[in-house]
Length: 238
Image (cartoon, rainbow, N blue to C red; front, side, top):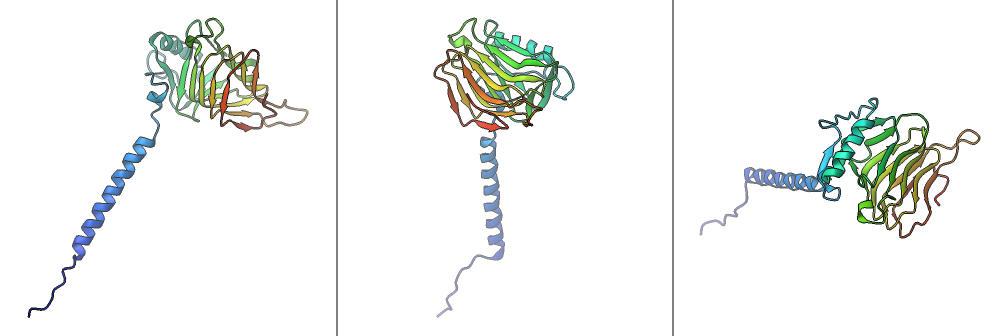
C-alpha cells in the first residue's frame, strides 16, 4: 500500500496567516482607539462648536495675546445661535475678568481638556471668571455648561470660577488653578452638577501666602452634586 502522507501547512502559508492576523489586530486596535478618543467639538451637550480661533474672532492661544474681546464676541454669537464656545489647545490670556450673564444667555464653554487654558493676565481682581444666572434663574436658561477646560487665575485673581444663582448647570472635567482665595465658589446654586472638577491653590507658605479654599457653597444653594473632586494645595472645602 502507498505510504500514509500527512498534510502539513508549509512555512509560506503560516507566514501569510500570521501576517493576516496581525493586520486584523491592527485594524481592530485602530478602530477602538478612534472610538475611544473624545471628539471635543461635538460631545459638549451635543451642541455645534464655535471656535474662538476662527474668523472673525481670531483668538490666539499663544500665552501672550489679550483675547478678551475675541472671547466675548464669540460668546455673544454662541448664545445667539445655540452653539458652544470652543477653545482648541492653547493658553488664552485675557486681561479683563470674564463675566457671563444669563440675561445675555447662559454660556456653553468647551475645550480639549487640560491644555485648553483660560489664563487671567490683568490687574489683581476678585474673580477670574463669573457666571451670574440671577437675572432669569431658576429656569433652564440659567443652565451653564463648562467642560474640558482649565481656568488659571495666574496668581492675580483671588477666586477662580464664581457662580451665582445657576440652575441645572454642568461643570465636567474643569480645572481651576493658581488662586489665593476660593477656587470654585457657588452662591445660591440649584441642582448643579460638578463632575471631575480639579481645584488647585497656590502653594501655601506661612506668613507669605493665604491658604486657598477649594470649593465654597453658600447662600440658598440646594441639590448641588459634586462627583469625584480633586484637590491640590487646598486649605478646605466648605
